[in-house]
Figure 1 (cartoon, one colour):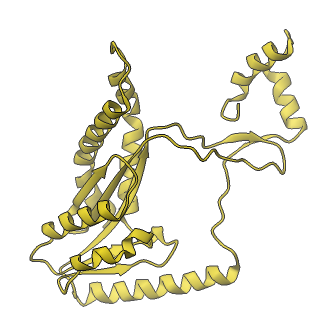
Figure 2 (cartoon, rainbow, N blue to C red; figure 1 turned 90 degrees about the vertical axis):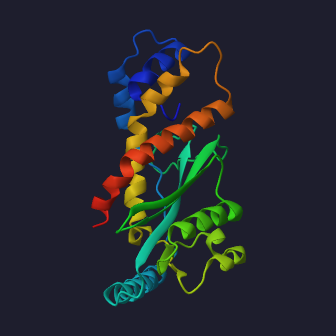
Figure 3 (tube, rainbow, N blue to C red; figure 1 turned 120 degrees about the vertical axis):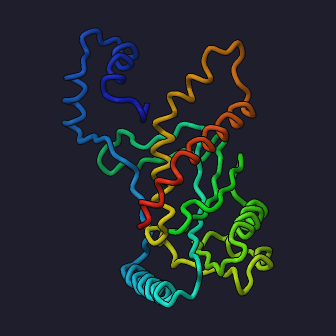
Length: 252
């Protein structure tokens, strides 16, 4: 019941407890009396203020290094790469909790689709790779090879975050004097402009979920997981194709 609104809870309480006159006002009054609130889970990344201050210094050093690279035209193109996930399962964002009560989330998940992308200020979305599962070293190596082909002839600097697979030694053969990598400081997604593109893409994707649901309705048989995944990948390709030009405005 954690994801139900108060109005949705009223008839359930009424049926379960046999309270014919129980209504929304009564339930809300009880929630207010006991301090129950509708909240999002809180996440904490810092163990101490010292770590936070240390990260600020690393971010400043990274910004200065990248700024020098840009000002001196050391590379013809700087590409920011990252991956994001589109879930084909329902995810609860809020729940009703009493004061001092923790909101626990279930670990089990359904199928998901991962999009790996690389963008630059000059060309917008340079290359992307869609996989119907979580990212791993082999998938990222495939993406990196495709990205490098599209950068052929350009001296390119690739900006990556600190995901473990980004440090895999299997990726080293892809890097050379004309295709190098620079890693962001940890927990510094705000320094990667591709996050703006992911935000735009997911916003558009959420608006299209109703259309996606209509595709699944009116069928004689319920689509299999493979059919749903194939349809989702196609939808993502269509959405990315419509949004990649808009990204050029976001990163300037």
